[in-house]
Image (cartoon, rainbow, N blue to C red; front, side, top):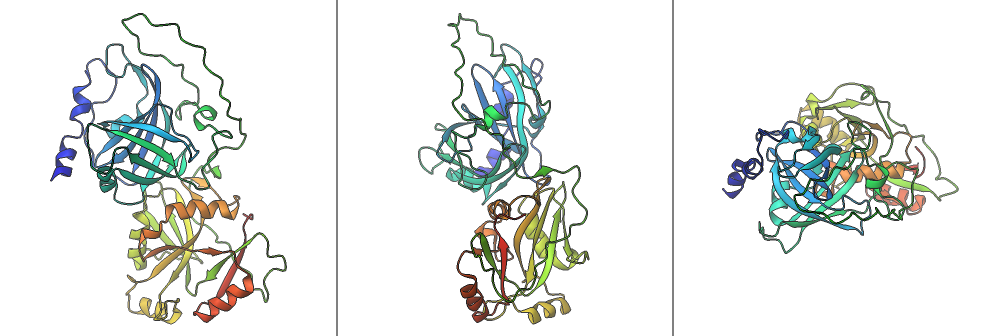
Amino acid sequence: MASRKLFEDALTRYREKRNFTRTPEPEGTVEPAAGALRFVIHKHWATRLHYDLRLECEGTMKSWAVPKGPSLDPRDKRMAVQVEDHPIGYNSFEGQIPPGQYGAGRVVLWERGHWIPHSDPVAGLRDGHLKFTLQGEKLHGSWALVRMGGKRFDPKKPAWLLIKERDSAARPADEYDVTEALPDSVNTGAAAKAKPAPKTVKQAPSQPERKSTAKKSTKSAPLGSPLKALPQTLAPQLATLANAPPSDGAGWIYELKFDGYRILARIDAHGAVRLFTRSGNDWTDKLASIADAIKALGLCSTWLDGELTATGDNGAPDFQRLQNAFDRAATTDLVYTVFDLPVYAGRDLREEPLLERRAALEALVQKDAGEILRFSAAFAARAADLVASACKIGFEGVIGKRADAP
């Protein structure tokens, strides 16, 4: 198969371009996937400053040179030229590539984290349209890589566009420039001095660097605050029974009330999933299919909050059928509907506005995630109308939440 041929030869071009007796870059090997898929971005002062985006796929880091770097503005379509695959061992590389070597110049690790493809990444790379979520220290939310020149794979035209999707992590370019606001290495926290590759021909005098017109922003790009360690347990938010909807309906969102079991999912730093009831009982072994569906999202250091249900003949949750499923130890058809993201990628989001958490959660749990794992839709209609409609189709009612509340 062509994909296997590409896999076997993935690092050939990388090795042919380098003399490993002179360059400090790692020679590397093709490695099997181990947990969540990794991504990095190197800041590279070669002939000209550029950024190298690398996504782990099929045992190597698929790589693109992005001359202007990533932009959080969906209106910016950044050129990304696909280059040779790099070894996974390159992810931690920082240093000076010596003169006369391929890519000579200073390299620092500008960004790192995990990435979640929204569909089969191999097919996306082949067809020229790859959508994914980034969980990094500087970059978050949904992104797209779109190959220029049509869907058919053409190695002679490796030009792509890197585009930020419209979500809560997007920012207008005139408000925030992530490469300017966060210029440093994620390892050292100190700006590396640009060291262009030496040339053997005389260079024209360099022009003064233009000052960016982007406004400085005091708001950091990532949501939440970093955690020293992922909590072993987490107390879920609880609803209060009300006889009537809020008198002031502005600023509220409403979700359907599911008749099931409250389940919290803990995903550790290695992507291992454990499922807990509201009272803290570990139900992972009972809900293996749910755990597998969550693991397939490729998350790490994250907590999800949701409701476990069984679907009745009318399409609404059926609590008796849910109990029967456990009695028969037949839980493969149960559904886990997630509605909150209290911790994400090692960051505590519990003090963030609900709408921000929901936007991040929706980007992770796509509509095509399957029947087992779902995202709880929110409604902005009148609460009384929603309650009547929900009860009519077999739901218990609705849950009202302040959109701007933690």
